[in-house]
Amino acid sequence: MQVNLRSFKQKVRHNGKQLKSFLTKIEKKAPRGLDQLTQKLNTEVWNEVDCLSCANCCKSMSPTFTKTDIKRISAHLQMTPAVFSETYLEYDKKDKDWVNISKPCQFLNLKSNMCSIYEVRPADCAGFPHLTKRKMTEYIHVHKQNIDYCPATYKMVEKMKVLLG
Image 1 (cartoon, rainbow, N blue to C red):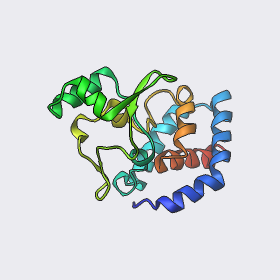
Image 2: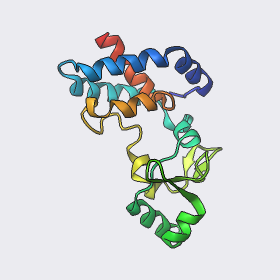
Image 3: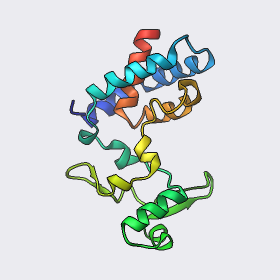
């Protein structure tokens, strides 16, 4: 299903704090079967959200680039890792991560919302939005952040809130 970014951002402004509070409640006292519920809702969410109609993550966030990512992507682009890093990345001293120097991502085609390095994209991108990456309670801090950027995360938490109250 197509994502309307304007509508999504309005929903976040209106409901984002409530959904984050709900996640905090879940984090403190996880209901039984939470991980199984997350798996079930994950399937539902991806039947309802079309990433290519959105690409808000690529437009407004930056993945972290591991050394392995940098080696793989630079080889794909026929550059040395040093030249790739100097050209596209900056080192975030606070978080100690390599991140994009620009937003939207320099590898995003803004007309098609497709990634020009999709087959070698950073692991962080490949796993985004990390809905079922770990036990739900161990990754709630990430979901709280991603509610603001990702309609799939927003929808997942919204569905959980309806079911779990």
